[in-house]
Image (tube, rainbow over all chains, first blue to last red; front, side, top):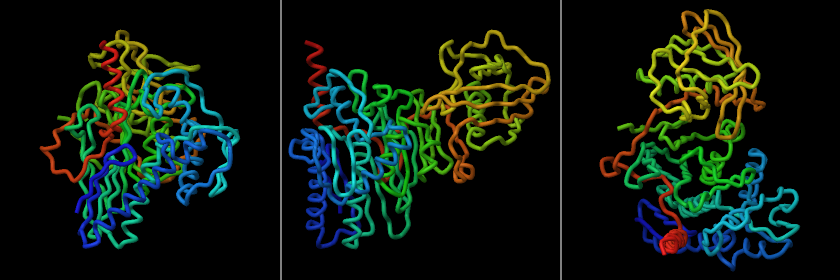
Length: 288
Length: 180
């Protein structure tokens, strides 16, 4: 059974094995879950919580998911000395990556320090002034995790969730999934293949897709520029939200820093097509 | 590893990066296929630069020797390679990593133009996790080349190929505006 749909700005493919009689009910449940998530965390719609937070200071109630994602952002914020921050939203907007996709840079400001603006005590966020928060670096990963949880809650234990190339995989027989690592310069090709194990998630980040002017979708707040040293990276971790957040963080700091607090495997692809990978990233790479 | 310049520079990078993660462990340089020649000491705030003895430098002057996480900046194309007498040398090095500049101290023992021993003193202030020390086995590919998906049996492809439709539409609009 395969579901395909657009959500949170990307294409989702969910494979479920086997498709049971309650499949369409389950699909509706999942799509509702995703829509509810988007309604909270999207900065691209005017009816979201994030949009309300961008209008004026106040006290805002987050859903249950807020606890985990705010904790991850806080951890990565401290680990990256502020390079990874949810406060990057206004900077992205200054660069042109706004609700209307004007993609024309106007003026970029460095984001404020976390402590200056945000105080999160679950489930409440207090802000001292209007700010545009952006959870794009890990939100998709968290949503993948929530979908996986919804499936296992319904006793579905064999599935592959693919949200725009970020994948979570479960197989009750322990069989591995062959995942190609997409060549950033050519979507019909892959630079290698990794065998994903059941219970693993893989996330990918590349700097050559959402790009405009001199920017792409990751902006280093300390340099107000998009990192160009890395072309793409892949992260494998148990948790999809962690994999997603780390894949973005790899553009901002040395992986050794991230390894002090997280368990993951990674592969970095450089613009000249050289590759650097961790010892446990067991992929077959192609050179001809 | 093959016998060409690119892979030898990567072996060096591999060595340096290995050390920066493993806190000073002797590395038997005889494992390297090419002898290395130090061309600058860079004592104070130097940049570690190595050229490869007997290796044609085909890269242009301002191409970095390698762009792996511990790349070396080639400040000099290999016109003058100085071969140092046998002995022990100390070099303070800096290298560029994705997260910024990292410092290491390197002590090299040279014999017959070959580094027979190298000790690296990492200067990073981060604790090195045990997992990194156990699992670290850098695997370099000098150049990966994409293979067509149809030629492989894949369950899935991981990449960021699918950008939001709104984004692509905006890019198209801008392109058209630029052309008018």
